[in-house]
Length: 224
Image (cartoon, rainbow, N blue to C red; front, side, top):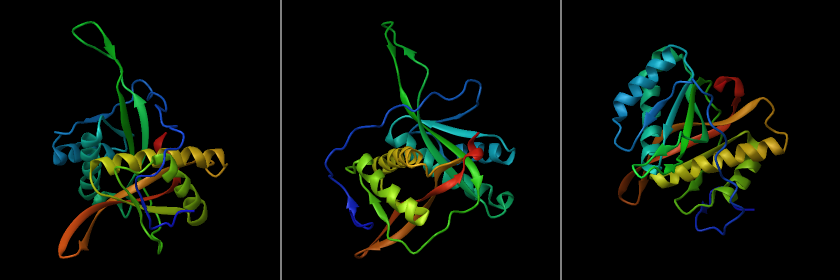
């Protein structure tokens, strides 16, 4: 068993289980995020939908766009903090196939995107736990095996990410963890989600910033 504080980097491959988990229901409105999307404007649109009680999703393609989406979610939480009454934004990641695009040559291309389901939820407990560090080289399947054990034992698990690629790996690991929990009959009517926040830490003489994902089970009804 790997220690919880260990860096999960450059690990041997396990079965590559990750794939599209289904296409979102037709007619459900969603927000789009690219690498060049203005974080503040997207956060404003997201917080407006949350105030209205609407089911909210963000679609992003590629690590840079997904990183921008996560930053927008953190800013949106600040925007709606007064109305939230102590609640936080809990995010459930999913992978979906977007509508095919037709190139000028007539060839259709299929794109897979992250779809981040965002909802107001009660804060997840923060226990005295070591961080699990996610890197760009982390194997998400192997990481998920560790996360399953921690979630089953403690109920929550904190992940630390630095950069867009490590955040994308963390999202994949969270999705696979949810699948494993379902197979172990530990999910029930709940979903595995995360709350994202910035964390400043000291590394030698340098101050650095990372993103922490506090992962845990929330009511699945939040996203239905």
